[in-house]
Amino acid sequence: MTANKPQNGPQRIVFANEKGGTGKSTTAVHVAVALAYQGARVAAIDLDTRQRTMHRYFENREETCVRRDIELPSARCEVYAGDDIVALDALTEQLGAGVDFLVFDTPGRDDPLARHVATQADTLVTPLNDSFVDFDLIGQVDAESFKIRKLSFYAELIWEARLKRSRATIENQRREMDWVVVRNRTGHTDARNQRRLDQALTEMSKRVGFRVSSGLSERVIYRELFPSGLTLLDKGHLGELGTSHLVARQELRRLVANLNLPMPAHASAAPLTASTTASRAKVA
View (cartoon, one colour):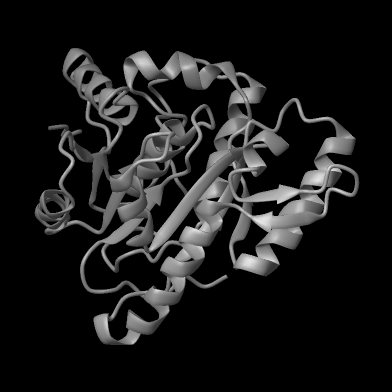
């Protein structure tokens, strides 16, 4: 699929749902770093003031750069700890100046600021574990047939936001919102459950207009990388990688490609490798 042309101002990529434990922060960091590896200018805002996982990840990345005296592509990351939407919009405008992508990580709970940035997203990424516990976030299924019974509040919220956004798309020169549901942690899903989820996601995607992408499988390496702030793309700094790690890197590359993000003219379309032009990590 051909990526849409870049718009005026940064592309807003929002990683959001109202459930924790779906790999949202890990996915957000890896996508942000993948974009930086391609030469894009990336900034990030962490709205999870309790855990601050994305911000801590980028802090660890900067510390590793200093400790090892190396340069790695990264993103400037800020935590917004307030509760005022106007102030958040001001920070968004400030951080978004001069960057190509602005990545938001939101808390895994119902939160007014998370809802606000989700409705303002150019690309909304909703990671889900492959289970009906997580699927319940976007829709309820019949206990016997597993057919969709009704949309959830969250799916209705995004549906209404997309309708409003479509009316303002031409006037504001912004892309229509692209909603991508990412299936994370699929390693332990049994075949029957997999088929039922496939059916439910396909039906739901037709009703509310999201796309479905494979995401990041359940792998220990993601937890091991957090203290150093390294990612699977930091080839040459990770030591010897096993076959599963190489497969995980391919999963990440496939996910980034599936997001179909509009790359700026100065960014590289080359494969994501450590040889891509790098800049020293900067974390606020």
